[in-house]
Length: 482
Image (cartoon, rainbow, N blue to C red; front, side, top):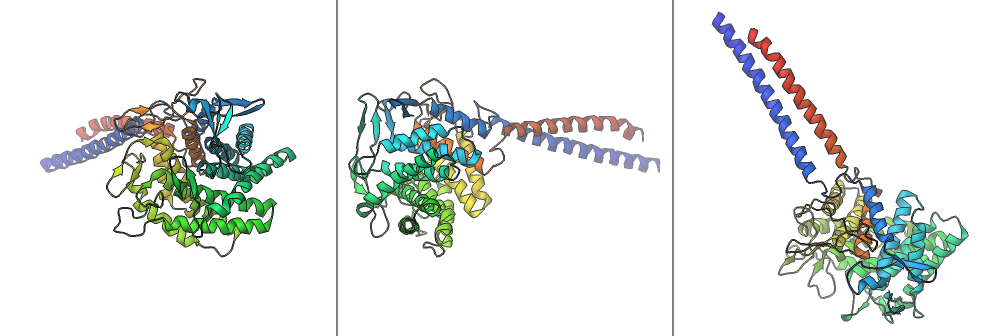
């Protein structure tokens, strides 16, 4: 009987020891997991939250601000690379204007309003007597350059003017501000109306001119024109002419239908789900797909305010988005969510992996999440944010570029095929990425992400392991004595 009792005690001791060991082993595994997560946090700015990153991005942009005419300022393109370090591009300033306007909307703050006004004034100053826009201001010759046709940069200009004018007019209280935003809207309208008859075709596409190719239609410029038309229509709805609202809505619907027609629907095709870059149907680029998708989501967000019966319908666009995300997006990113360049029938061009491409996709995905409510799109956007802030193959924070004043906060161009970092920046890259981060902040993805939370969890787990270990040691003498 004494022997049976000893066997039972030994069995109890072994069982408790087994559970204690396994509990400690499980907690140790969790601890190692948290350590792993903390290891992949952004290298140079670990713990920097999204608000700080947005402000750093704007600080870089403000460091590029130069007086181009007495009393008037705008933003120069590059820091080191020539000739862009001596040029102020209209399209890049339009991207910056949209970013400033989005900051005002999300943060309900006037912090960057004067910078926004400077960018809008610069774009309006670039408009010619033919109502198109010059491409850039040359700081060396002090002259405007490249104009005379509806070149691709006009799509950027019109979108930036229309988007910023509408967003800012919603909260404008001073007559001087309302006047400025009305003029911005008028400049966009003048370009659209002057060139519509020559540019928009019967199938809805807009033909643009390019410096190195014949005139043709590309998906990204058409996506931007779609966004511009929708916000011009909204502007007319709130403060203008209902007849013009209907006209711009008609043009927008035709544009949206053409964009949808550029999506490959054949399941057996290499291009299934993606949008062709142009009418040759030879390639699909990540950045142009991102801009097209942003235009389509802008359509979903605004069209019901403009029209009851719509064509394309909500369900048409929704189905297109899911085909795109499942069959293009997920196949054009690496395991860390670095955005590839493009795909063709023969290959996928992975490099260079550039920040502005990831940012274009991220912005579009935030908009998709807003209109569809599917949490997977929020996750996708977060993955792209993580890639830009350190979770990439180089484990480097890509927001470390210096501006003309040697202040950091700009975004590197990206990662090359040989593993090198293209550590210069330009206004297009930093303004596009900063804008995408503002969209991320808008939907308050859990601090997008807050790595300080990982440290808290890490400390709690460590304390738990220590307590379990100590409690196990205290119980052993009692069990042995029984």
